[in-house]
Length: 258
Ligand code: AR6
Image (cartoon, rainbow, N blue to C red):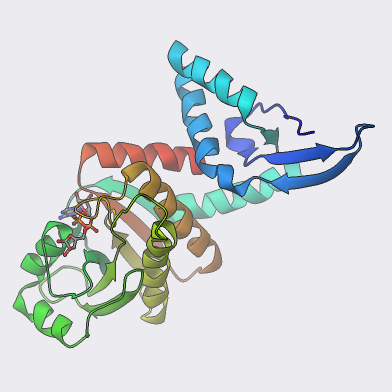
């Protein structure tokens, strides 16, 4: 029968395990609850509010703790995770602003399969880069969802534009998460291949394509985090949020993850 552990420090809280015991109370299996990541992050956010005196948040947290199984990681695991958190902190930034003005090696465009321009951030990037960008895009034969292609930046301060195509949100069971992960990972892979050291992302898919910002931000943050852990050549990743609300969501989720 599953048992619940107690947690004390939100920064050391890891996704839970279900612990299966035999009748004598001996542990026979521990199954990591990786699918519980969303809940784990939500619990962290509620805890922050509860600590600041929000009674409603405290109540919700208590309910979660009674139904979710959580446990504290041991010190060794915590040290390891703190090391990777340092990496993420030094190489990573979330800002509110306009991606077209970023003075970095590359900016990422949330494009569509044609790569021939559109509205939102795509429109803004094409306007700022000038007509030569569309001319180069015409030579690329489009781009599949979740993949990425690279062009020069032309009149932009950034030397390169990496064009990626996010998934349209269709309820969450049409492979949206994997495709969105692919956007971030494949863009970063292209960056490494082109010796790009500093790069900015918009919040891919969360505009016209309708991906819920809460969920999309977690995918973005985790995928970037995992990539930075494995690729030291990237020195700076910036997520550029266009609205205050998007900025707040990304910031909150970063605080919970790192
Ligand atoms: N800088 C940073 N972020 C921006 C900017 C900007 N200048 N302008 C908008 N955003 P969207 P999608 C934010 O719709 O959901 C296009 O027509 C915006 O507030 O641009 O991936 C393409 O051609 C939102 O948070 O991209 C595709 O057809 C985020 O960028 C389709 O939209 C993404 O919103 C792609 O949809």
